[in-house]
Structures are given as structure tokens and as C-alpha cells.
Length: 333
Ligand SMILES: NC(=O)c1ccc[n+]([C@@H]2O[C@H](COP(=O)([O-])OP(=O)(O)OC[C@H]3O[C@@H](n4cnc5c(N)ncnc54)[C@H](OP(=O)(O)O)[C@@H]3O)[C@@H](O)[C@H]2O)c1
Image 1: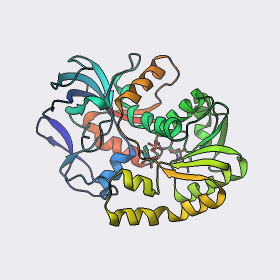
Image 2 (image 1 turned 90 degrees about the vertical axis):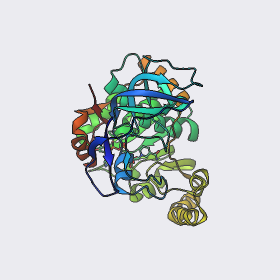
Image 3 (image 1 turned 90 degrees about the horizontal axis):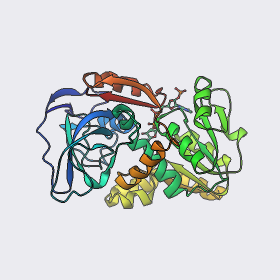
Image 4 (image 1 turned 60 degrees about the vertical axis):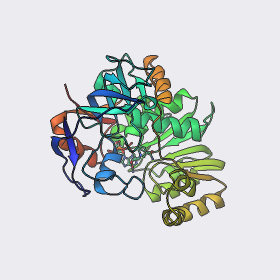
């Protein structure tokens, strides 16, 4: 089958369109014909070699963490899906590869596609939707009336997280450029800080939760925004010891991770705030709940650009600018 192949780790390396063996679904797998695949910064980071210690994939490999498509075949143990079903997923680590014609996905990672979305729209959702869910619902346990700062509200994670936080009853502040202010307001943001002309750490205070997806300087400034007992949750690093344990990293890497986050953990402690890093995981059941929120109109996809499958490298060049407004997707038909 046709697939985009990463032959070796290298910064901004173009992927090669070539042939890969057909995936063979195991008893718990669902074989899916990929109709659309979303791009994520995680794909770029794996391509660049930045994730080697955490996700030690061996090239040649097929990247791609988001898909929407049609079920072709199911393994012997699969109960929830049948051929012909329209589905979407963020396949689990170790079983990625959505930049291909077909992929075998664990049944547990899959959900029925929201009926009101196109395949391209559906492929934009899983990774960012699950990330927002796991940060705001699982980790932060947002309650109505709480105040949440979501950094980079115009990005893939931000556009979803603003809508989910509003649904949970939070007051939402976000950082965005002036050009994207109207878009993030329309998604539900109550307070928009223009990150180019304002200092969010001087404008905001008494927040319960900050979702950080930006750099170390923003992470540290975010401490000033939180009230005592607040939660600083970062998805862009640095990783913390709990993550290293959960990921099963060896003692050397655990030590490195402890060092990487020592400074922010110390500063957070001094500020009376909890710091944690979150690395999202595949979860078909959570995705089912996201499907419901999309079908009832609570959350909508925010798409920037759609490229034909053959133009995947152009789509990568676009997300690598860091300027995408919402999501970028490639479609196969
Ligand atoms: N740990 C996890 O599980 C996990 C999951 C998902 C994502 N992530 C990470 O989270 C980060 C964000 O991912 P994403 O997919 O949302 O990225 P993205 O869609 O590529 O983000 C692009 C957006 O960020 C905005 N932006 C850039 N710099 C900004 C700043 N200083 N302040 C406010 N907004 C800014 C840009 O707006 P302008 O054009 O106006 O600048 C643009 O709209 C990435 O590092 C990604 O790897 C981690």
C-alpha cells in the first residue's frame, strides 16, 4: 500500500511516498481504510528525532497520529465495530502510521466518527480533543466557575480546549495574536490577551488552572497567574518524574527527566502551585464522549487547511511554521 515513509530521523526531512507492507490486523485490531489524516506537532517532533528517548521508533516508519476512515475488516475479538463503519482515532503509541492507505488500529482506541462531520473534519479531532479532555477533565477536574488560562488558543489544542473548558462551566482566558482574537472569542474565550502587545502575567490573577503548550519562559510566567493551590499543567514540557515512571523510562532517563523539571517544580512549590506534565494517550471511550459533544453542537472542529494526501510534505511545511489556526489535515479522496 502507499504510505509516506520516514527513512531516517532528520530535522524538517521530507517524507518519501513509497510502498509499505499491508497491515495485518491482530485479534483486537480493526483494519481501517484511511480517508483523512490530521497532522500534529508530535509528527514533526518524531521526524526531527526529538522524541527518540521517549518513543524509540525504528525507521523506516510511517508517521501520523490522527485518522478518519472506513472499517474494512475486524479481528476475531472485536465487538464494537463492523466493516463499513465510519470511524476516527488517535492510534496508540507503537501502532501509529495514519499517513498511509490503511492502518490496523486497536478496537480500544477507536470510536464512531461524529455523524455531522466530514472525514477531513473528523480527522482533525482525536489527538487534540483527547489532550484537552485529559488535561481539563482528568487532570485538572475543572468545576463550573473556575478560571482557566489556555495558552495559544488559536492552535490545534487551544481551539478545542477553549470550547471544552467553556462546556465545563469555566471562565476562560487565552493568549492569541490580535489577528486571531475574533476567532478565539467566537469559540467562547471570555478574556483574550494579545501575546504580542500585552503581558498575560500582569493582566491575569487568581486562576485555578493553566494549560501550557508554549515555551519555558511562558511556563514560568504562568505561575504568577495561578492562585495558591492552582494547577500548572504543561503539554510542551518539561516532563516530570511521574511521567517518566508511567512511561517506564530507564533509571538514566528518569534521572534526566527529574533534572529537566527540577527548576519549574521548585518554583511551583514555592508559589504553592502544583506542576505536572501530561502526555496524552489513545482512548476510544473518551473519544466516544467527544463524539457526543460534537454531535450535540457543543464542540466544533476548527480547520485551517486541507491538503491532498500527495501534498503531505507541503502540509508539514505549513504546520512547521507554527502559525496554523486550528488543524491541518490531508485527505485521500
Ligand atoms: N503532551 C501532549 O500530549 C501534547 C498533545 C498535543 C500537543 N502537544 C504540544 O503542544 C504544543 C501545541 O500544539 P498544537 O497542535 O496546538 O500547535 P499548533 O496548532 O501548531 O499551534 C499553532 C498556534 O499557536 C499560536 N502561537 C504560537 N506562539 C504563540 C504564543 N507565544 N502565544 C500564543 N499563541 C501562540 C499560533 O498563533 P499565531 O500564528 O497568532 O502566533 C498558532 O495559531 C506543541 O508543542 C505540541 O507538540 C502536546
